Image (cartoon, rainbow, N blue to C red; front, top):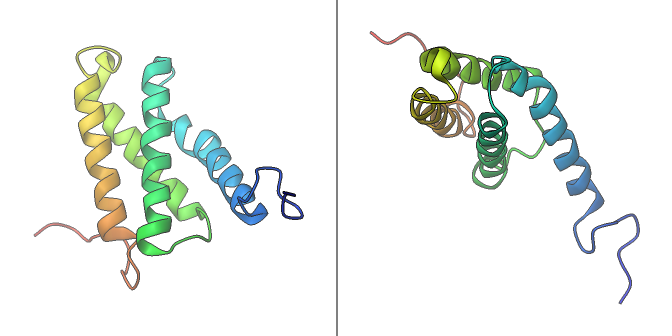
Length: 127
């Protein structure tokens, strides 16, 4: 059995491969820099995994397969920065659960409320 033309990963379409490569690069280069320099490799890996998972869910649940735009990258980076600020100096220790819970919650909200079809974007101020 031969591979489809242009695919180096079996039946995965070349366009899907390219989109995934762009997405991983965007997260590594645009979102992960939101972590403090003292963040451990465990924190970096958790962040990459969580952000990539929510982006993949966005593709399947919201049919948003055009890739991350600059506003998405900025939003995701701000989530990382905010969660890290709440974890404080102990992001690699006692603050890690705070970081993880905050980032997970913000990413879930981004998926459900910021990126759904027809959604106007981020929520306004809470009254």
